[in-house]
Length: 112
Length: 114
Image (cartoon, rainbow over all chains, first blue to last red; front, side):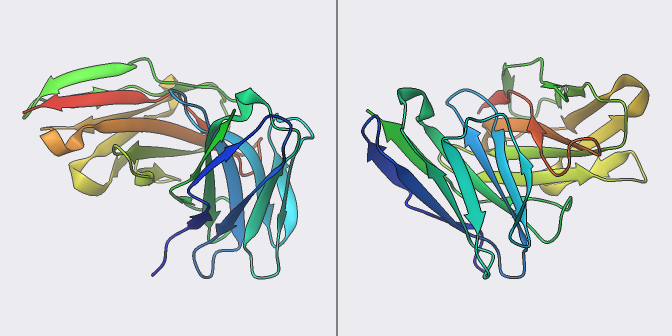
């Protein structure tokens, strides 16, 4: 069984650019969440989607947006990148809301 | 807002030593509790979780955790660590007041000396 798949694995962007990160959940999982993990810290919640609806949003600026597609895959978009957006972006999927969360390997974003 | 504290940032143990990592959370309502492990270069993996019932939870690789509601704690334990347990450990909490968001602690970096 494939786990949670994220792409790309690594990305380097310049300040001010836009980035799109992608996540494919475990087959059958309908809930997808996004987290940002800055080096040396625990993951911070960004968004959660269930059945294509936004069900939760963390304390992140409007430059961050996301969506979930009919096949339950998800995209995280970040506009006007700042140096401080450099982090590991994690996607987690869950069978249903509130159940156990399985994390992907993440996308390492570096903003220069 | 929920906060999660892991008081031990770095722990160094010798093989066969016993391990206890502390985790305290702030919210007093209904919570789900998780411990995740991140081995070097790998993704977060679930060690164990507590939803309800027996407060002593057994997970994978010989780990266990005890939920003590009166102390807002969910400490992780292992009677005898191995070199392969070298990793970063994260405690996470989901509470019924914050939807499905997981709040993570800052992590504890464990090094086991062979």
